[in-house]
Length: 189
Image (cartoon, rainbow, N blue to C red; front, side):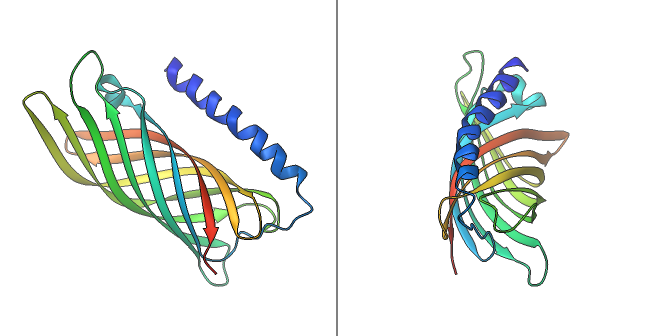
């Protein structure tokens, strides 16, 4: 738990200078509306039973985000690949790959240079656990809930930092983790 707290504080500390820089540029309008495409990467923090057997890992994310006409809500679809290694000298790893669809709501002024958002949705994820002598693989429904901040870097490019709680419903329990993601988004139109 101490590693989780330290890592979360470290990730937040990295985001503070970016937010401060974005706030200094507040005289430049940073519209967050329209279709956007993005790529991100970051840390995967296993929780619960998952954290008992696996170490801190990493993930990569690709996304497309589209506004729902005449509403402040956006529809976001993303694909994630995550991997963690096993603890205590156990060989192998846990790989999670899947996609989800989220409702995303931006908070604050749409022309602000830094704009927080919340998101949540459902997806389908495959968990593959490899170990000496074999492997196990299952595909299950997942849910996620989280939030982040979008930072304007220009009229068509944005940086983002976000954290989500992910829960993959596996038979007899669940696989839970927190992906902390940093990335870039590009305006599509």
